[in-house]
Figure: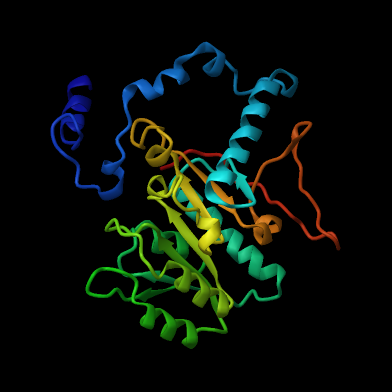
Length: 278
């Protein structure tokens, strides 16, 4: 069994024997030294089923982290769940569905995705029950704004969202990002920003400022957490102020998730899974 497992391991491509042509993930390698703090007993000694009164320090850490990430991204709120980029996309798109549902527009189910998007984008949209329409790209690989406008006009009545990566997958800060967001908003849709390249924005610009409504943050790319595989991939989701009533979050009150209420008794938060699938 040991030899069999080792043989399977040797078939995997890793940085120990080659460069990995995996795009944005390989442009954000983290130093091993950055992982030392998670080995400190003060952080890793907490039992997962410890009673709440023994976890107050962690609650402080969570609140601080939410606040810091909200400031970095320009969003009004941040959820510390779910714990993977793929699940972050799924949770964000479900929140979009909930947002439209609460506005009486449940019929909005079209998701526009640029041709250059990461493969998880259309997969997440389909899992969220949306119909995917591809937006073309120009000769430089940027979003074809004319094609985006045509498709937004054509599906103005049922447009739910646009999924866009910024900076783009080919590493460019697209000059038309604000116009792209404005077009989608003008046609009743919301903008989901894939936060894969958020590390390039930190300290320079914020997605909440140029028009994104929700995004996930791949912590293994921007905040020095290991990538998936043997070690889990982590992500966080952030939201605009108008989104807070529909975003997933866990607010612990006793041993049960607290569900905030809006005027009229509309449910404000729904639980989001904490599983760590990458």
